[in-house]
Length: 375
Image (cartoon, rainbow, N blue to C red; front, side):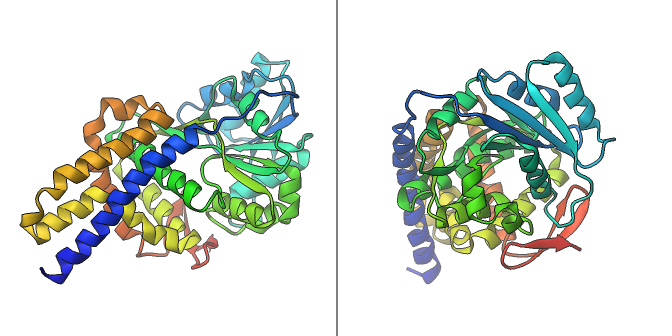
């Protein structure tokens, strides 16, 4: 047998093993649930805003509607003319009994504007348990009860919430959502059982103020593009526990066309490669179907690898999207999973090239250590 088919077969075996591990990891995650909430820990919810995303009002409304006795909402916009400010003011009028404030931050003095907003909001927040959540997140009324129950463990410093991506109307949005719901979380679940949670990901993170103070505050992550990953890494290194929360949020990713979606994917893969180089290389094992196709292209006698791999991949995808996330999109459009796998593999390869990203209309240069700067 030629060298290339042998190499591809070895990678495929590793990818199949990874898929089997995903099923086990999903079961292990679901077996860990928090106990009953004994005392309502006061919570401050920090919401950085920039413009009116698709569904913004309903996203924010879901936080105003929390069934929890002790919480406040702190919003931040860069400029008072930002239309998101009007949405916040409308909701403040609808929910006068909810403690909510809006601050204007001005221009950020460093590259990561989100981190600047978080730092400003944390300084205004009254409570020591902080929920940092992006504007495109929607939750159910029991969200705070569940995460507060987890933080009854006084050793817990940070929790990162897994998310179910909800697509907009576009094909590319649906394709990316299926990838997030079948592939991205799989890698996190496997990392959780192999090495433990030594990082944070995603658009909603819950942290103790004491844990943030222990790492030097938001100033430590102000120059990083993947500030969430670095934040979790630093908190874990400082001796606090980091967990994958049992609460699944809904990430409303909007209706992106191909060009916008491609920019987003490239920003994601280029950032991930610099934040966690070895983990990025290992992502080749999260995509078994493209490897099986390449193997058969190199040696047609291995044709049976395709149906076997498809079956294993389907089981792994359902373990994540079905068991963990209860994702109706993947259930309805399951036939897009192999399409997304091929697209994802192509963007993974593209992530090895290029050192610039497009973000909110600006071009940034990515350094090898994950820091970035305006170009």
